[in-house]
Length: 183
Image (cartoon, rainbow, N blue to C red):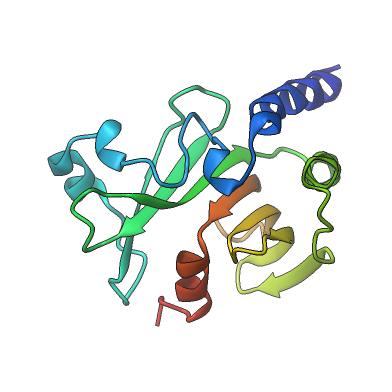
């Protein structure tokens, strides 16, 4: 029953997306690409809590608890030099007790997005990484912006919780992430 209820709740959270015409109209936790992070938090709070994930400081990120409780965590990114803190990436994550259910969520969301956009996603990919298995599909828009739906299946030796994520990324942020800013 819990599984069925979780799937129904998740499908209803997609309803706000179905009114979108492009990636900028999508909302994750009532946050859209192009919004100002200053609408949510003070500059001091943002600067105090921004993450130190990247060696390349072109972009910055902050993670926080979901404002609407639809997700377990939210992460947003902005160009570090942007005084308006315009959001270029927003990701919502839901912790998973059962990774197989996470993979099913990918398929449900993929079909919803495929139908809405009349756009074929790229092939589902599973990549092992140092922490476990990263499985994802992407919808690449003609603009270069992207929606990624993914599951992270972490190895048990790491102290991470498996997670389902949906991410909205602008073309420029995605290009920067592909440059491996961690090194």
